Image (cartoon, rainbow, N blue to C red):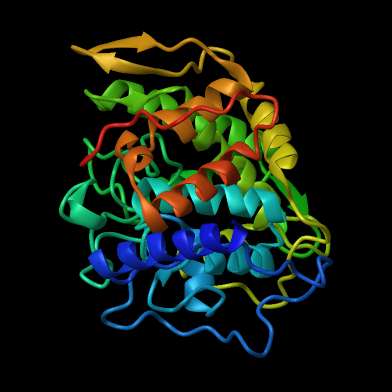
Length: 359
């Protein structure tokens, strides 16, 4: 009976592979042997500027990893490569890396061929079988699902360039460091990015979007993820030797997409609890920042829905429902990736995606 089941199982996947060639089973990569502090980049990961056909996107961290070869320099990565890259380069905890990589793959990648662009669409990544989510795989730079409004250093989609660093916004961030940053005996006075810096700068960014974006979308998930960007910057871009995030490091990663000299990754893996603590701290200064969306020019607040609300907005609302009704390799990959997201929210009831396709 077991042998019959095995033959049927293999035949099922074989038929699916013939119908839609190129499918690849997604799995978890090996964990790091060394999860302590170490200098980044090492001798195997020299900086190289992206070539003419290499893809870069809105995330300075991913761009930096790609420029050093911790991610493929092409800017097209597999689920496994994302986990390994962010773990090796920034010492991101394994489960957090897996959950984020899974969300990226399901929201803006091709979960059948196991490919995701850290930037925009590319002909090197085909659409999903039968074009169930549109006629192209759009990549992480595409607005909605993964990329969203109220970024630190990019304009909102309805206002300007939502993909590339905006020099004016970055200079504003440096101005806030000059106002609210900490002093350093090495880099000078007001040269260290502090929580107070992020509290005030993030608040200013919200007010700017609220005033100037006529179709602002800042639902609960995006609200927390945008503050998560600040927490990630403070906790993962700081030099692991002293926990200090200097303006020099900020410029190196945000502007040049390269690791600075004598930079070390964190001394221990950073997990979702660390990000959550940072989000709480940055949010604590201004209680009038609330999630919501503009409807006919009026900002309509969302209810704050806690941890399970974040899971629902990310793992349910922002992943297309059509992925649930797939078969074969794609179905196996979708189920596997959905579980990686849910692993970050073990106390929340597992739910299937309900998001719209083709957007």
